[in-house]
Length: 315
Image 1 (cartoon, rainbow, N blue to C red):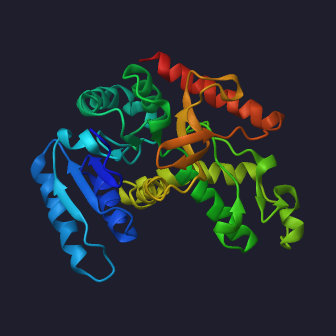
Image 2: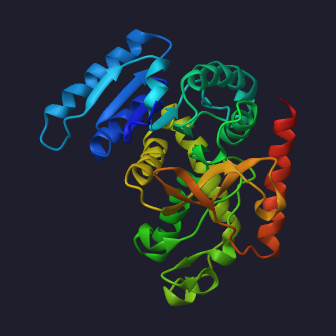
C-alpha cells in the first residue's frame, strides 16, 4: 500500500505522546493524526481533548482519531513514545533497557506486520540502543528509523551558550553528539556564532572570562534530569524536538539536525546508533554528515561508541 504523505501515527498516549499530539496541532504541520495506546480509553480521552482545539482560529482542521496498528499500513511517520520513562531520583535512562526492549518488541512486531515504509521516530529510552536494536532485529530500512537523540540536548546547549553571549540561540551553530545520555559530547572545534569560533566568543562578545566548556557541557547533560526531579517528567522540550523532525520530513526540508541513527560506517563505525548531524527529507535520513572532529572530539566519540556498544551487548 502506498504511503499517505503527512499521516502521523503516535504510539503511546502518556505525557510525552499527548505533548507530541498537542505540539503538532499547534504547529499546523499535520492534518491526519492517529493515536494508539494499550488502554484505548486513555487514547480516546487525549484525542477528544485535543480535537476540540481545532475549532480555534489558530488551529488547522486536522483529523484526529484513536486507531490500532493497522493504521500504520499507509502511515508516513510513526512516533513511538510507549514504555516507562525515568523518574525523579533515577536519572539513568539505561535502567529502562530491559523493560523497554520488551515493550518495543511488542510494538515493532505490530508495526512491521503492516509496513516498513513509514519513517519511525523513537522517543522511548534508552533511545540509541533501542533504535539500533530495532533496526537490526526487524531489518528496518536504516534511513527510515531514527531517535530524537541529542536534538533536545543541542537546543538546550544553544540556548545556554546564546544566553552567555547575549544573542538569540538560533544564531548559535553547535551540536551535542553521541549518546543521548551520560557520554554525550560537544565537538568544540565546530561550535560558532555566526562564524565566530567558540574560542573567540569571549573576546568578540565582551565576556569577563572565557567560557567554561566543562561546566557548560555538564549543565547541558544535567538539566533534563533536573527538570524530572522538579516536575516529575519532561514533555515540552522533547515533544518540540519530535515536531522539529516531523516538520522537516513533511516539508521535505533537507535541513541538518542531530538525530540518533545507525552510523553506517561514519568514522569507521556501523555497530551502534548515536546522534550525528543528518539531512532530513520526506524520505527520512538522506545522509549522515561526518563533521571534521579534532583529536578530543574523536576521543569523545569513541567513548560514547564503546559505552553504547556495551549496552547493546547486554541485549
